[in-house]
Length: 250
Image (tube, rainbow, N blue to C red; front, side):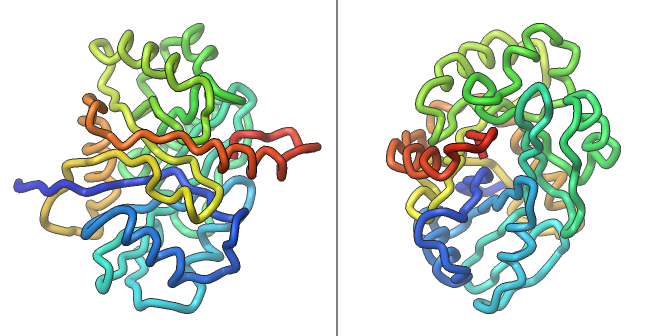
């Protein structure tokens, strides 16, 4: 099957800087940053920000429950949830609208996500940053097989990315697992600041889209051409808003 290059930033939370529920503004920025064909991930925490976003008024869209497609922009927006397990954060992409995974032990979250594996993508986000699961995976390597990718670069992980890359290089020849670079942004100016270029099927088949996304991510093992930027401003903006709360990764 023929493939095309698609720029993706699948780890975004929106929600802090100059985001006032303006659907078209987010889409315009995403389209500009990701280029003529792109995939944006909007990730819930323990909330419904994806559902809120896709129900806003704005550009025409096709809704496929776990993602929307905007024909006028040739842009996909995929639902994600960053699950706050006791052992570290896990990003699950492809959950349907209004479906959520409750925070609990990592093993239980992985099992729940894998029960519908063909429709989910499972990524270890910022594994060696605040509340990452990297150290737990080192001590429990049998769990690595449950993941489709390691986030080797997070735009808001001011430290930790170096260790994520070292970890991935040690395991990549032993597991069928990819490497991804995303912004982990919490503001509009961070969208697309870090990106992974994926080879995706040129023919769009809605019922196979998430499975194709997962396969493309698993096959993405050379991240040298990924766009990898740090967002110190984003990190500081986000951290200031999280003072007094337990979570500093989402």
